[in-house]
Length: 401
Image (cartoon, rainbow, N blue to C red; front, top):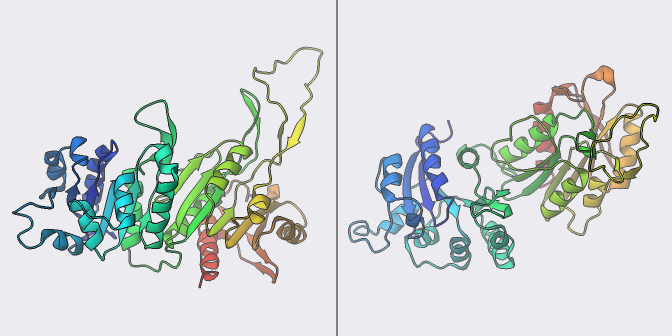
């Protein structure tokens, strides 16, 4: 248990997501962590120090000028007497203070005085998150070495608005904290990765769609493996029945066009691994009503149009990641088709596999792949998809050493 015996300083700032911090305290303590809370004035408008103190089983720190707490220069002690600082929720205001070195209350002063790792879980309105000032502040904080988890996409508490801004769920934050404190190698720390996974569903009418047999297991496993090596991972997933990988920001889409837009929003990134089995074609105009079967008329014609090529778009993008990996699921001429795809898509690596029905790979739990680069082909043995993911994450990490 990476958190057993670890001292977590939890900074709670003022947003409606502060109510999630109560569950976060419980989850951290379940895993053996000691939690010491610091609350801003805004946080105390949403949750009470009494509730926070009851769950943390300790003193709640709120005031920079507390005579009792500052007898031994309390803010310096708080900043140093911990293994990790978690800010959840982190408001736009607090991140702006951190990015510009402001220290006008206990939370911001502690954050300026610390030399410990800091994990930031932003939460705010989508327009606030997308504002150029917030984007600049986040980028500066990343450059300063702070780690981020979230925000996630979804409905906002105020209703009527949706987008990126929801605080990561408590268990996601716990998983991110565990990665920061597990003591294992983190060669991808500070790197951002975007991974696509699963199939896409291209609607024909409200009840029918074009799809494929992808389960999403390989893409989800790769996202988790990159996160374990320290990368900040965004997973863009088509419709799957898998749980979200821990510590990974997940964006759920259905259509290829939605997947492309989510990937482009994720740029710039250091790493792109395009695993999703994206439908090559979609119906040019999907019916708004269910197509009825009419005796004697035969099947209706379906006019198809080409879907966007997500891998090619990323491989030739102005903000192209340093490492671009594509997957090629083939039923014949695996190496030949993989080499062609490598050249056309602008990728650094194509992971090619034979998905003929007799292999059982498509939708299965194991994979047998060939790594195709400009320098040659490397065949891997039959492995579980988790083992493939771990090896591939290691290959990617080597590109940054």
